[in-house]
Amino acid sequence: MMQSHAPGKLPLLLLVLASILPWLGAAAKPLDASCAPASCGSLAIRYPFWLRGTHAPECGYPTFGVTCDDPTGATPPSLNESYLRVLDIRYAARSVIAFHANLVDGNACLPTRFNVSATFALSLLAVSGANSQLFFSSADGGNNCSRPPGALELNCSGSSSNAYWFVYTGRTDGGRADSMPVPGCRFSVVPVMPGSELRSWEDYKATVRRGFLLDWTVPGDCAACNASGGGCRYEAGANAFGCLCPSDGRMHPATCVLQDKRPGFSPKYPRIS
Image (tube, rainbow, N blue to C red; front, top):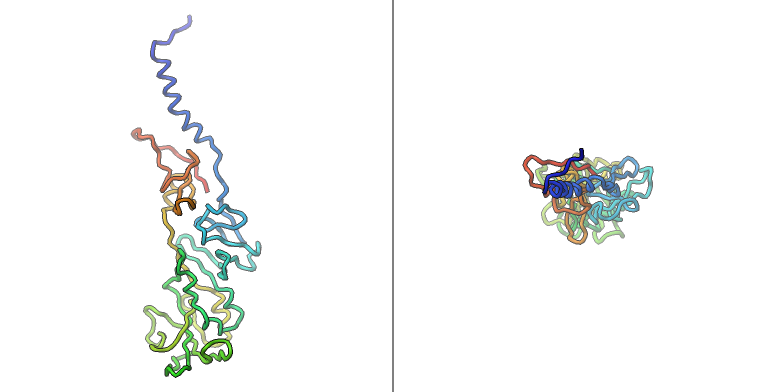
């Protein structure tokens, strides 16, 4: 005998199905892999960095674009199409090790003509305070600059406004008093890796080639976005962090927050890169 449905139960069943179908459909959406981690040699590149020619620009911040000139990694990739060459990206520490390509050809007079730190004036990258520094103090011009202990002499006749310089390593914070720039002297500074020392000119090129530390600070909490199943993105229209969620394929300002308020209901979104 065929059973009849009680009045009102069928519309209620349809209502329940209508409420869960959107979630079923969302879970079935293909994941966006356009920002999956890439590599250049042994260097892993992922948010907030992005690999030009492989990633879409929204995969990272505009100034964090990496150009891979040599897929083998023998020639380190450049950062933001600049003279900076990236040796390592330390994601947990939010730091980068890079060197300035113009300073590694062995011409020690080049740093007397520009300030490396000025390159990052409007960037989300900053020269780390943990670095040591190469100081270039002018030794002429009538400013009575004395030679610091352990400094090397440098003759830049014809290549800078001041011909003679003293070059030495030190720290600008917490370092020895005799490693600081002499007051009243004209000087230039090149950051180098912590603990670096310049004992002879034979050490110069290798010291600069080892690079220096850069720290980055970007808006948003990428770890929280990933934990909610989302993928970290740069939202160009808002010039801000965005969390791409697979449930609706849209950007959210922080995480993939569920709108369903049922007590104890906690969906598991699939993680996307």
